Amino acid sequence: MSLILRIKKKFNVIFKFLRKKNRMKIGIYGPPNAGKTTLANRILRDWVGDVMGSVSEIPHETRRARLREGVTIEVDGKSVTIDIVDTPGLATKIDFHDFLKYGLSEEEAKRRAKEATEGVIEAIKWLDDLDGVILVMDATEDPFTQVNITIVGNIEARNLPLIIVANKIDLPNASPARIKAAFPQHTVVPISALKGLNIDTLYKCIAEKFG
Image (spheres, rainbow, N blue to C red):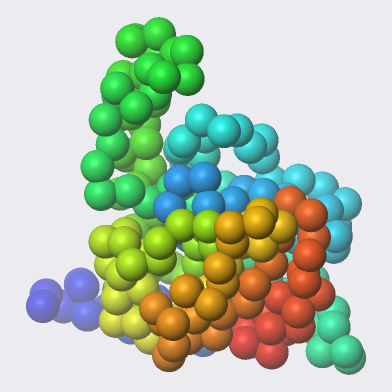
């Protein structure tokens, strides 16, 4: 490792340490349509009366990371101020044909696929600048996917505090237990970001884990 890289790495460690004294930078990760932006919007509405961005049934609606700084969460006398990074959906393969079924033109579908691919790369790069991660999984889907296993491995390799959110428990076929069984080494919080179900439990966990 070159001297410049060693110096940069040391400065990154120092900056992270100093930032933790004031607030944590937390990334919201997960596959497309798991509910990442819906969760980010829920957190912002509840604590600052704002939203992060629009949501859509079309995969990869979020194709660039979005940052909202200074969100303070207070639960049971505990307070934590976090910077929220809403990241693009993670996928191992992005095919423009997948967008055509939503009525997009071929030109628009190819553009979205290119931007979504770039977004995945950006999301992975963000891991190096985070203090913790909220990983959103769809509780109606099988959690044993390459995307979920890979991102959990990347988070563990960086020793980042992790909360796994089992989202969409308002749906009849949701099974948070499958996610808990898949990743027993991590905290799993079942919620519905859309309906706000069990969201207070998540806020308490955020205050404890990232505070």
